[in-house]
Amino acid sequence: MFILMVVIFVLGYTAIALEHPLKVDKAASALLIGSLTWVVYILGSTEILEAGHSSAWNDFLNSSAMAAFLKTRPEASMLDKMHYFIAHHEILHHLGEISEILFFLLGAMTIVEIVDQHQGFKVITDKITTTNKVKLLWILSVLTFFMSAALDNLTTTIVLVALLRKLIADKETRWFFASMVILAANAGGAWSPIGDVTTIMLWIGGQVTAINIITMVIFPSIVTMVVPLSIVSFTMKGDIERPVLSAEQSHEFTTEGQRKLILFLGIASLLFVPVFKTLTHLPPYMGMLLALGNLWVITEIMHKNASEDDKRKLSVVGILTKVDVPTVLFFLGILSAVASLQSAGQLGLLATWLDTATGQNIYFINIAIGIMSSIVDNVPLVAGAMGMYDIAAAGATGYAADFVVDGKFWEFLAFCAGTGGSILIIGSAAGVAAMGMEKIDFIWYFKKISLLALIGYLAGAGAYYLQMQIIG
Image 1 (cartoon, rainbow, N blue to C red):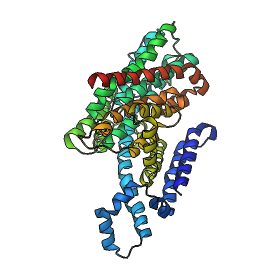
Image 2: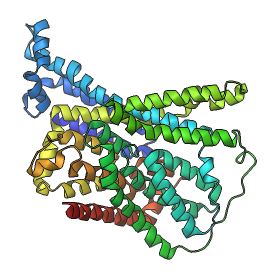
Image 3: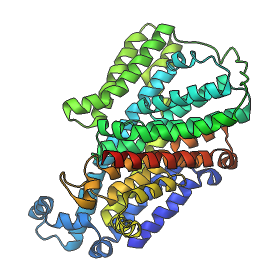
Image 4: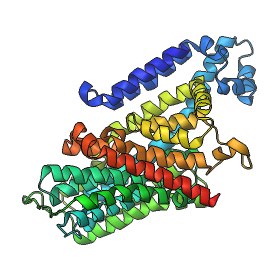
């Protein structure tokens, strides 16, 4: 049963990676493994827990929760205790942590959809007038880099790829620009606590703090973006050809004042969340829900006299139908599956093996995780790392010092997992989104972009290493 849990996870993970050939949405595969791993865990609880690999079970046996259970069920057998541990302790414990991430994402995605539906991003895109390829590439990449940090890399990629359709007529040129947007979006999301799902997970999990992740990871992230851009700048020449937009594509259904107001409020709402956490010490998702509630009220007041058609289009109730719920369900499934492997002990064994294989070198461990994230999704990889390694106590020395809050391991994990996925187009949410929107060919991306992305990734990793050697 212990091995069967791993087999189910690997098979499900394979189905997720082969989502497009199989034509089965990755959310469905994730929900299946998120449920089945727990089913196998509780059915084989005796065999699995008696193997002695679950540190959570060992801790539970001597906990106040076990004492409270025995007061109500003094006659309980060991099997009863195991079932109670899994069904009423571990699942609820992990569900609480997972829910924080899901509610945060749901709130953030809704806020961004509100801004997009009100054409708020048009305020930014209308300012771009150049047709020079190199100049436009730098403008879009820098814009993507900072938008990704404030919004998130997935949303920014969706907005920028939609913009490219209005800026570039030639398909292959648009593919190249969209691919460079992926690199910039992933680099921009890596240094912000709200820029990527993985950094959100590490921030909410308490492994990193907002200010530290910004100050320590922004330099290597910039290097990761600038190095590929600099290489391309020497080979790219000429101007782009602008497409001719139809009347429907150029139609404006919000006023300029409304667009500017909603853009400002949307970005301010997202940037407010880290401040909220610092001031109140409440979980970040509470700040995100507060921000969403405020924006919801403002838009309701703004459109109270609007026509029924405009209300359906611009009200938050209507906008909620556009939120990517399958993505939220995907995270629920994959994080649940990883939680079961953490509880049962498989991730602890993997951590021990990694430490031995790499000689406890955090740089080798994280670079490997980053490269792996180009093949498989970075969310379960980071979730797995969070499950494999505990946060060390403040003042820890030696190898453990790298695992304290804001330790080198967690900082470098945020960078590697966030940027390594750019090496292949299926390696990040931003890449998958661009691939779906523009129908970018996997082999084309591999030939044209993968080497650039790998060079940028390794350059950024080297920049982080040098930075830490200088800082000490």
